[in-house]
Length: 99
Image (cartoon, rainbow, N blue to C red; front, side, top):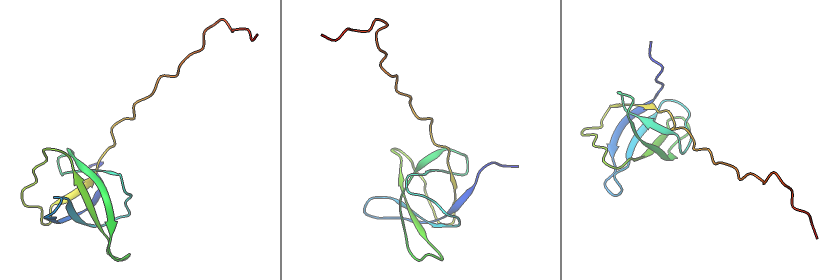
């Protein structure tokens, strides 16, 4: 049993900005990570457009991703990389007195 969730299937790669255009098979949000069938992150959802009943998504590909033929290739939801935690600045143990 696989924990991958099918997001949609590839249609073509746009000529201008080389984004991957897919047909969506479930609800998606802009900014969600996208993976190929092997689980490798290939990009993020850049735009969602088209009719409500059969929407399309434009996926901005990561640097160096080569897909080859994209027609009917399955595309899956990817796991987002963990967010970096910022360390909070700590106060000195001694409180400074106000003048």
